[in-house]
Length: 241
Image (cartoon, rainbow, N blue to C red; front, side, top):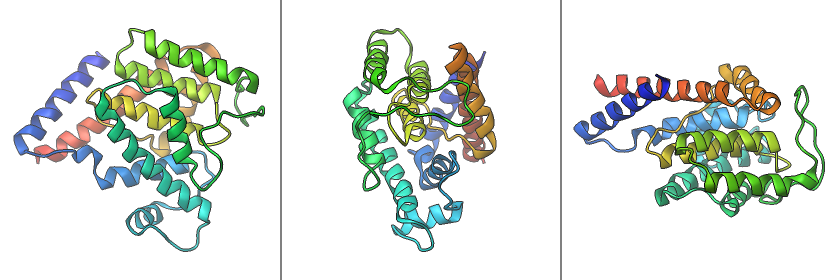
């Protein structure tokens, strides 16, 4: 039923866009601001408020916040613009493209695009990322699965997103990169991109942890599909006015 509802919303939305001769309202500046704010705030380290993110994206610089915090915002916007462009190819994302995205995400912050060479721990998590010597092999297996599986693009995006969160291949930016990759596959498949609202952060992390510990991706899949459906409903209501 979840997938049927999703396809119904997708078709209805596409028809409304066609009838009203509107393009890309789901990729507009309002979404970019909200998505970027949620993305940089999820881990709780970046303190730029919503209005600050909005001003920074519009003006390229604001006062009172560190250079790193500001670069995290601007780099995320650049990455989103890049995945929208890359999605036009309709191809699976490659390991090199993922590394390039991470390099852009970390631009002028730290060296990006390079897998970690140290072990890390995630505070409060039951599952801990694998030893760094296993990262290259785990990432190779991830892209082998993507290349050979019969998953559709929606489920591929959710799977890659979950695996990046589990492997934690880079020193920083893994969550943002995982969600960007998810949106790459949503856009590639003709769906609308989504953001994870901050008020659903705990539920989001809980579903990721279930996947990490139990290898059960269904709760995360249901959570993401519900977010897509809800965003479709909001956009459809706006277009039907």
